[in-house]
Image (cartoon, rainbow, N blue to C red; front, side):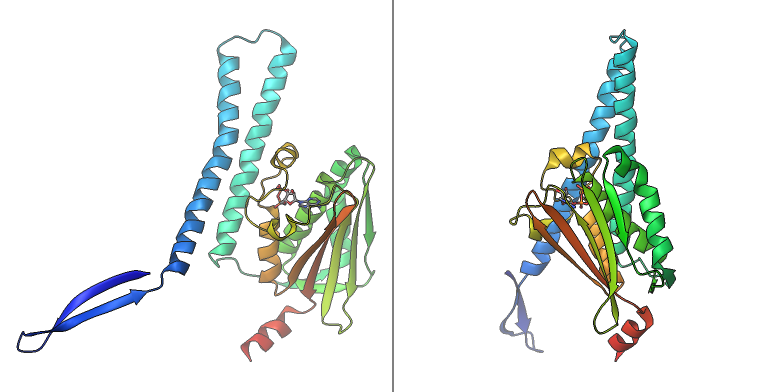
Length: 269
Ligand code: ADP
């Protein structure tokens, strides 16, 4: 609690008493703490790849490495860490745009079948490398009103997580169906992967939260994907949920209204 006091005087200048202002600043403090924690996290996340780039470049420049194979592997690390920096910066910018409420929706009807074929096409190579089967179970003639770029970001994130956190030879399945009341489309992205421990489940949507930092880093993760997904789903007036069984697999469920207009109108009511 913050306490401010000011003396009060009558018109003739005589002392009347003190006015105290008691302000509960718990919420403000919490926000300030969250902000500085975020800045600290961002700095740490950015410094790690920068340090790697500098370190390996310095070693190469010093002329200490003679054989070609080692030189190439150092250059590959520099390239990969550069790539990682790129992803981090674009994720941080995306997140800050969404969180500052500057992100808006540009909706149009999206035909789901070709949309998901594009998603599995984009990630096909990554899945193939791990011999992971991508399965699509989406009604042929289903459309949804959504911001296609943001929808793409949502599902590229969920499906690539499914691939990243599934061992070789597994499968990732995408399904879409209309809800009973016919107002929403329910999407599920499920994998046969490593799963998420129960105690970590409530935290996976937090910025920079990772169950296993090492594995996330190795697979190129930034720890921001799911918090971006959550914001984008909410921007569409939808819901995001996760269920998981350790060692058996994880399912993310995204529920989105079929029509955006009807949601906005009913919210104004
Ligand atoms: P990252 O870039 O680390 O993948 P995300 O925000 O996308 O960051 O995910 C946060 C964390 O949640 C991941 O580091 C991982 O530990 C866990 N996670 C996300 N998706 C899955 C999944 N399909 N299976 C198992 N763990 C997952």
